[in-house]
Image 1 (cartoon, one colour):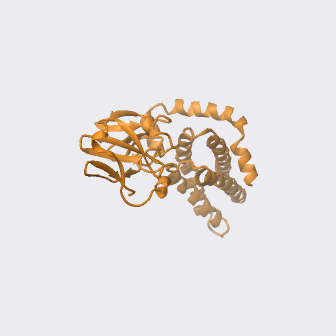
Image 2: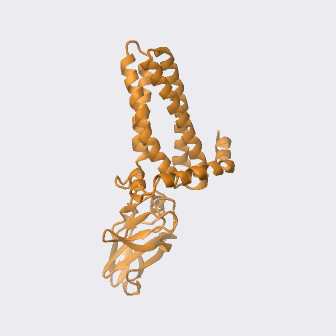
Image 3: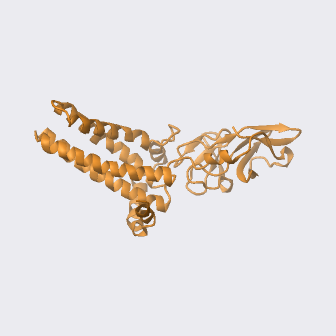
Length: 283
């Protein structure tokens, strides 16, 4: 299984199809607010795994009810809920997929394909049940659950092995020593400019606005891009940094994500000024 997954990650023959789908998604979602909505920026958490709970829960429950007698109506209702609930989950998933790295998109493409097949099977199962063919509907339901379970396995591989959709910066906190760390003389920090310093070889982004200094992890939460090389801009009156890799935008005063594809805030670090020296510590 490990060898098969590694081959899938390296299957560059999928890139041609994947690149076309990626362009199609960006064309279908031309407005940034649309993409931010589906990324889960407003939620502070990726939206796709939240929406997935509806079809997964409904389809699993229907499979159990199909093993019992006199549960046709309830099972049919759950298949319908799962089938229609899968559509917004799929839309959010495709939106996230379009902003992943190439190897992640390869695995994600097969993950999505399995779910599309599973959704089609469940649609057929629903049609059979509504036509009174409950025996065929049950068989198709179990087949659909098997297929989407395979897709879910690939989704887990994407998240837990390849880091898709998880905050790429936060693990760096575990490598930072406890206590306060001197970083720079306050007078030496330029105002309204991005400055990168290191604590235990961990890059930290520092931004000074008068006597107010903000520090945050320098690697972008989305894919680890260098925020220190990003642009400073204003969004709704707030000074923000824009990641140079994929355009994720964070407020510089508190790390709040303003625009995706990042869906989680950028981790900020406590600061203090001692004898004119800026000190930073782990939260």
